[in-house]
Image (cartoon, rainbow over all chains, first blue to last red; front, side, top):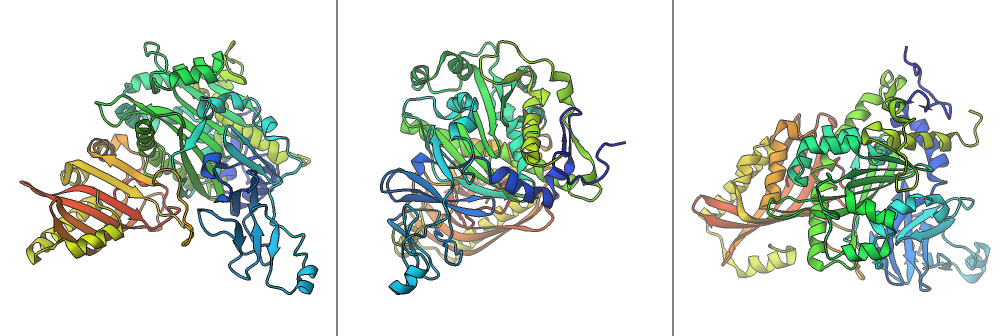
Length: 441
Length: 182
């Protein structure tokens, strides 16, 4: 008899860490989704933007965190702030453009004007009325904390949340491999792509935490066509490469190059000396041997980097992909998808990396298109009244959980195979912990 | 690559108007192409491309009319050449290589508002396209629309697409993927 024979509603009962299972309801249930908005998304640090999207005072971009519009602004003082993008008068969405530069923001409904610091500067009322509504003291709803790491701007609605550095913790070692590997850092190659798939946000986050086995079954052929590595070798690398439980919900896998490949095989030779200046020895070693690395920062910020070619005359070019999975509803997710490249890279390399990035992990990407199909199929299999009573299977973890790799060079606990599902399931285990916080369960 | 509405407008005003016969050839060519795309005849579609083809699909953006600010490169969904399109076609036409298109999406490409002008480099064509798709995992029809700027060139085998720039109409694509061509 399946242990989950009824829809599970009580916090803490959805994921059975010991058994290696989780309720299918976590991928479709609207009540669970609503609880997540309070327990997870209102309390976590959430990725907002990259600093290179708003380099000058007055620069701003608009974002969605779930169904909440957010305005990210660089002030005259250079400080980056993030606000709920709504006028405090009637709640009208204040800034309706995707990006811009301005000195103020004017509500389209009644003309209330806000400064770059979020403070209300003017209304249409005479002074005596303005005084009553607190014109001189009102301001936009501001995210409680906003901070950056390696050019990555995060914000949280929770004033009691730990600092961003504490929150990211040991995952900073791995973030450095994606986004902090040269002194100049990374820049975005353009605005984020956005698209919507009909499935739960956790499916994307888990896939990037990451799901090793699907890489063979879903991406095997396109990997063969574009990575120039035979499928049987890819399979062996997936089986023999580590899955890392970093801690606090952050997880990653590292697919390593086959042994005969030279160090930094997929990278621009011009950038390698810069990596060696910026990274420590352990980081250098991991970057040098990395064929593909995939990570999710809890809850919904994910990364993937690999080196790919779409032309058998051209050597593989690396792309660096950063994305968020925005939970629009229990069964609907909007992907926000950026491509990053080293600021120091040559223009030709930047263009090549951009082209490779959108041909692989993007709405039209040869890898992404198959993932989204699988997630939609999971939604169909889990959302029904019968299907949601049952569980999803992570029991492969039982085979590996007591066999961590000794002397792994990076922080966290590494397991010997991406097929272990250890890092993927660890995200769910952390999700359960966060969802259970403050409850009796 | 042909450009935007403004460059196309200049071409339409300054270029040599298509004869009725040439317009009919362009019209038939674009309908043949949409049939190939709608029916999943991707190898035949690939044969309608020039080996020098550039193929780009761009996302739009909502910007302030008086102070638009763009950053980075274009926001492209596709930025492909003949070789990379060949890999995409190989993926889509090999059942064991694709999850997204096996079973295949049911789709139709509707091409309208066709105008063209000849210049020294070929025939510049602007058109609108509406793609309607129904998938096994998302039975409600999905819609993607775009404005296309094409350059068609004469070859011994007939007209071929040398460049395509498709400007999509959705800032946030209401599709789980773009496992098809615009």
